Amino acid sequence: MVKLNVNPTRMELATLKAKLSTASRGHKLLKDKQDELMRQFILLIRKNNELRAEVEIKLTKAMQSFVMAKALLNEKFIEELVAIPPRSVSLDLYEKNIMSVKVPVMNFNYNDNGNSEELVYGYLNSNSELDTSIEQMADVLKQLLELSEIEKTCQLMADEIEKTRRRVNALEYMTIPRYEETIYFIQMKLDESERAAITRLMKVKDMG
Image 1 (tube, rainbow, N blue to C red):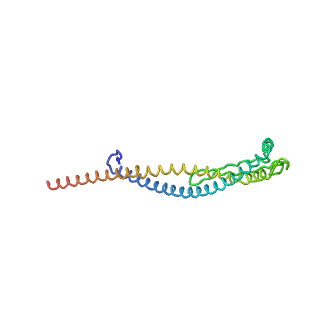
Image 2 (image 1 turned 45 degrees about the vertical axis):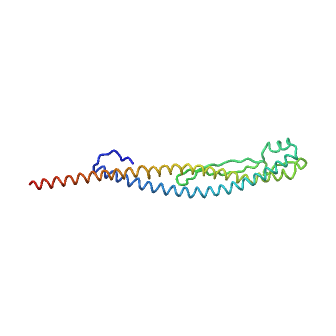
Image 3 (image 1 turned 180 degrees about the horizontal axis):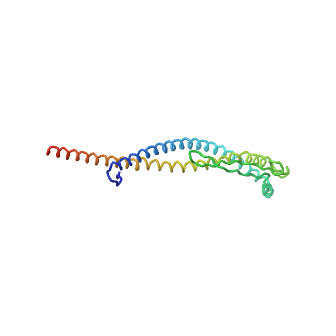
């Protein structure tokens, strides 16, 4: 490790010791932050994986039902059926702070058109597979939106963990060792100067 290019004086020694103390405290705080971020990140990843597995299963079943319905129904009827959704979704988005990381919080509001949550269509051109598909899609929507919030939070936290890790490593392997080596160098120089001064005084005393 290359030491800092400074003059070996007592003032510089005191300044470097203060900087070393600050860097050591900063390193501990950042390390604690990194550990807590990792703990919360792992919890979120587990929740994300569980929710994603549930969503994928439900979406697969819904698509299977829809494919079956599409095979048995007139395609134009299905296109007309979904052309105008029975309800709209509005999004209220704000942020919350997790260990200095601003993550999104999404609140979804469902606004029904005509006070109905379901598509209205006649029985003549429909079948049970279509009913099942629509019901399954509606059921998974809330989880799908929740999944998008969790995955975005995981992405932001992963970025912050990486930035914190780089700062921790920079302090641990570069800044702190450089301060320590420079302090050791200055201390050695000062000790040498002090011994030389004592030796000179002793010689002057002997000569006197």
